[in-house]
Amino acid sequence: MSTINILWVDDEIEFLKPHIIFLEQKNYNITPCQSGTEALNLIRDHDFDIVFLDENMPGLSGLETLSELKEIKATLPVVMITKSEEEYIMEDAIGNKIADYLIKPVNPNQILLSLKKNLDHSRLVSEKTSSNYLQEFRKISMNLNDVNSFEEWEQLYKKIVFWELELEASNDAAMPEILDAQKTEANHQFGRFIEKYYPTWFEDHQAPVMSHTLFKEKIANELSTNQPTLLIVIDNLRYDQWKTLEPTVNTYYKTQEESLYFSILPTATQYARNALFSGLMPSEMQKLFPQYWKNDTDEGGKNLFEAEFLEAQLKRLGLSHLTHEYIKITNLKGGQKLSENFKTKAKNDLTVLVYNFVDMLSHAKTEMEVLKELASNDKGYRSLTKSWFENSPLLEIIKQAKELNFKLIITTDHGTINVKNPSKVVGNKDTSLNLRYKTGRSLSYQDKDVLAVKDPKSIHLPSLAMNSSFIFAKDNLFFAYPNNYNYYVNYFRNTYQHGGISLEEVIIPFVVLNPR
Image (tube, helix red, strand yellow):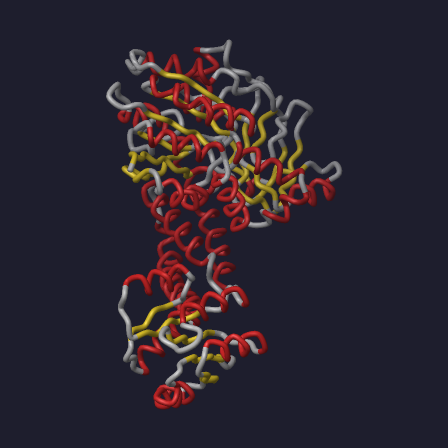
């Protein structure tokens, strides 16, 4: 550890000689001085790691010195030491952003503790976090092959996200890399789990809450005519992203329930979000509402009838007596307009708000070099999401909802994954373009890389044509055609995609909150 340089300012510094000797024996370097003026001159000319500052001194007082010191070096931590316990002195000192506050007489151990707290805090926290994760790492690694139920996968994914966020602030660069490797292995095992059990969930009552059952199983129970409800569906919001937004939301709302549910396959908007609002699987949507279901490979116009699907589902669930409104926001102007007029929504029992920003962010990262830099990894992606949210009309809408006593539900339709490795696939001209799933005829692919479904009806998906099948990418793979292979691999590598099978895409948040 490099030497820590301490400036100690006290007009009676000679009485502190034992303290200084104690710290010097601990390898701290102490510069003593006896006045605020002398201290300010020293600070201008020398680099110090921390200042111990007496509050009661002749000439410049401690508070006056503190104020001028912060103008010179705003980030320099200052520990105020005083005989007085007057409240106004504490408030003034705290207002000037002191690092700590000690009451005389101080003993050497108090000084040492303050140093540890202010200078070694991040290192100590980092070391403890790393140590705790390594213990958890061994547990997760041992249990990974034994995870055999959707409940266990939910708990495991929660643990991984928890440690991902904890290690984010760590100074130990190796730990996030170890966690990333563990998450890769977990995703590999999760792919095998989905391959084995997913088809059975449509025949078995032991199935998780899924896209098409979410409204019936979760949302419907929260609706009433006694309190308005705001249901926000943030397209493409992963669980880790929700955890970064949660502290901001919790300023205005307290969490009643936080749970996870499973997106259907493909984990793509056309399928998952339509399933959420209709309460039906895609094959049922095609059969019952052919006028609303667009069964083609064209990327546009597949989610134009969510309001109609919602209307039909509310009627089917016996909830048509609830006054409701469906709103979709796809740009800043639309969000600002809703924010300005949100008070008018208080008359609704249910206001459904689909917010598309996060999905647009993930797609824009593919197209824009600046976003590739800002969101080069999951940490950056989370940070960008948080920054958007804290400055978005959506947060303003949530604030207004709180004032209007809305119950708040936040969820999503699917997640996304940072794709790293290509997998070659060949299909005819009618094959879908998505990078994490393909549907079409005569698909040629690497068996080990995909979950292949020869009969789409077995998982309640419609067929594009006779003999059409589906393939879903596992792990962090993305599909690339042999034509212009190297160009497309370089173009799409390290971008965020969805449609396939991964913890990040499939296991997604559902949160119910009440106003504070």
